Length: 101
Image (cartoon, rainbow, N blue to C red; front, top):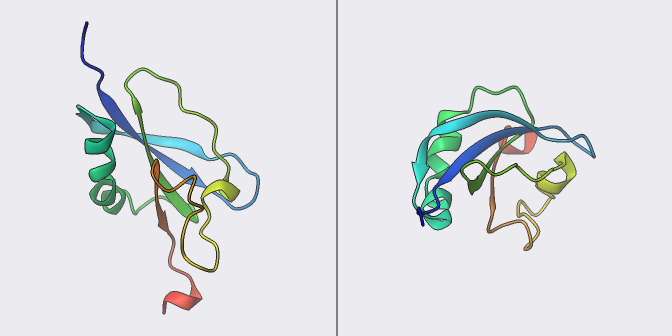
């Protein structure tokens, strides 16, 4: 049996119920989901050129289909935190807004 490798999909998300779009897949592959998640911060920084209000990194087994995701699933609420159910598997980079200046 071959080991499962993980890849990191980069998605661009709008606001509301619009679906996020997979815009890139990181070139690296990872031996575990935990290793993939640990790399999300750097990969998101490398993909800061995308024209979306939120850019999401999502780890998945290589060859697996990405589960649908909506902008409302990942947009940060006023608290700046994701809902607990989303936090372990999704990493989000939010576009700077007026409150960040």
